[in-house]
Image (cartoon, rainbow, N blue to C red):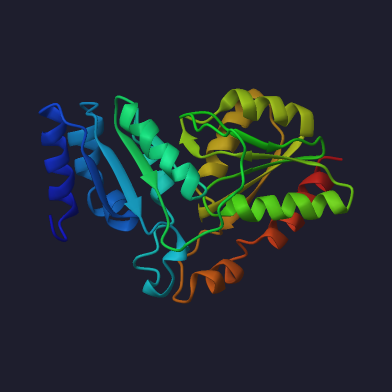
Length: 262
């Protein structure tokens, strides 16, 4: 299709109307940005079976800089009624996500990144749309992460455990529909939460968690993510350090959340 994301999505809609299951892929910045109106009106409004796979999401695009670093796509896409939004944590989960959305009847937006990220060792893990993965259980703080920050959250939870702080860690790959049942269960158990995402803190995973808990079980929710700022040019590892998207920030934020609940 060339550099023509609106046409790409329009063609995908036509293929879906013909009974096929099209997967349309482009950079997250352009698939969620430039093509948004076509996604909304030609795909989601008629509830067509189109799968949007957005690559190069977040600041880990790296040297391409702010113009290509999409940190708004969760917010943009989850605001569309009936849209499903997913961000897998690693290669193995991504494979399962693709199979799951192929079987699901309806529009889906999946965000994946650019760099190679660590593969998380799991036993008998089965991805399900709308269900969180409970990676560890504790009673002191609830940590909810997705995408590349799941690995950072795992390191943070391990570091906290060395200091006698036991965290529950949820991999919330599905941002919409979010797993309200699991969030509520561990919010009641832990009494405070930290969300972690490679996205603006406005409108993404942290907002989705806060929106739900503010109505169902109000607790302190602190957010690790992009603090309402654009990205910069640099290697993806440099950018994670620069913007505080690391385990050290998660540890500090978790301790702050725990202190605030007392």
